[in-house]
Image (cartoon, rainbow, N blue to C red; front, side, top):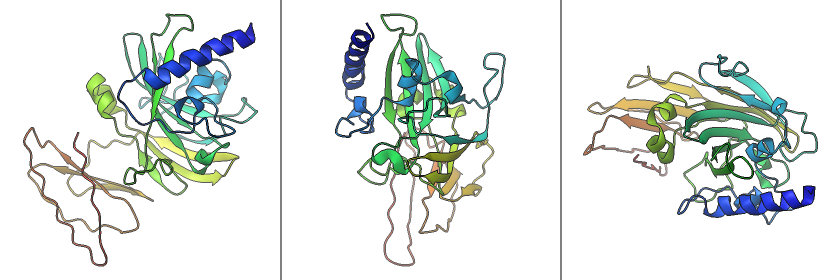
Length: 278
């Protein structure tokens, strides 16, 4: 019976991963259900293993900006956590951070933070936007799908999509989430920092929900590789950028036909700028 049920679940999950979100990209290539079948070890995602009971509730941290509440007494709003590999043989250890974003009908959308050790994903923290749909219905009570966040979107490869030691990454809402629930998506924007990595053994991370709404034109949050500057439309700013770090300039309230002018004046060699319009 056990073997039969596993086979049925695998076939069902394979269908949802490959065809459940037509036309999208962003599968990380390290989970066996998202193109990772070329590796000797490519376990299901931490969210999938948790859902099927292969990882207990005690191995998952749940976070939300408000911290503990009546609906989630175990939730926290910040903390430093040591995550152990989700593909290890000891499910009693902490293996994932679950950050719910919103529920729409019978679908729950969340961010998940995890660490793998059995394939090239072992170099850093994995960040995913995931959703369980049709909760409470069907043979298995839900279906699952996810997309990978690329923490270094200025390259074409996903081999560097991880949050690596000594850097921080703010998880911004994707276009998909902004269409589904813009208010919840904007209000839940975690800041994730990786403090330490013992490759293959554990990763130490800090997670918080900084208040970014009070940032002014020239105000920046700076921590290691993290630099986020908010600029209001109709204003201008001169920024000295460290060539060894990434800088995100966020221009707000541009409207439908807004125009943004960007001049780059490198002191040596060349510089690149990537413009994203959402």
